Length: 385
Image 1: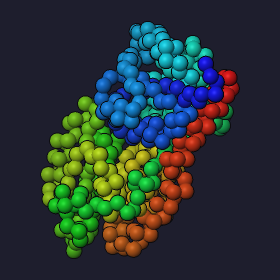
Image 2: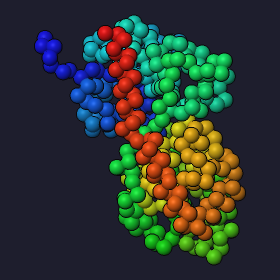
Image 3: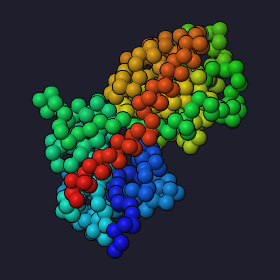
């Protein structure tokens, strides 16, 4: 073979779900922007789903291998063996595991094939008795955490392990930018140009705190009766996983109880998020704890002031009173106070939006995120050559 021919290095990404939420959008961003002349992404997912569709649109090969629960042990080695055969048959040179369940399978297969393995950690572990990844932190060649809040899971005697690197989520600042128009979104939902829009965007799950958002909405209307008929509340998203389907009716029930009716708009799942953010005046994050809230960065990139829960990795993305406000998790009163301030002081809100945009441009561009990950690939591959 002519060694002068530059053949891209195949990277195998393993992930345990084919649905699309924040982590999956981060993966899509990575493989969209990765240097295809140097690296060729290949995926193993567990079943067909929206993520498969999006990856194939990018011309990326997707293969399906079911990942059984590690704790049950049944089928673990059989599954690892399938991945080993795939690695050997497709000349994979590095494995990048992106979910808790895929980490062990990825490690077993990569080590058997003597190629590097990366564990990408995107989760805060809350309520678990045992953090398996923390106990086994020494297994992968590299651990990537998307915030210090996540990295703290792996602290040993006050220090992070040497094989760990923090790489924050990145945002496409051309795709999300303040010049995008939100007029069509407002027209679609019957929102006048002189109405103020306060929005939330996330999958429907109890941890996301939509109840807090709706309670805050009621308080805002009570605090600002003079403009109450000029404020709309946008709820963007829906249930991603089957166990959360009940929340559609549940949240609509809360809207009825609080008599918010005409003031609240459920948009459902949307693919036009830049336009959605553009239609908003203020973005709210009510999650009880986010590892590295992608929606915060997207809203900031779109030039919107943000009111967000002061927990998890969120304080690493924004500072109180700069690009918005940090509030106590689960406190609708504090959210209402901060939103009311911005609505009463639109100039201050615009300044916060500009500061947020600058923060994203300086620290959270997708190009920087991809470059740092590519550098890890190069480092690990060089050590194996």
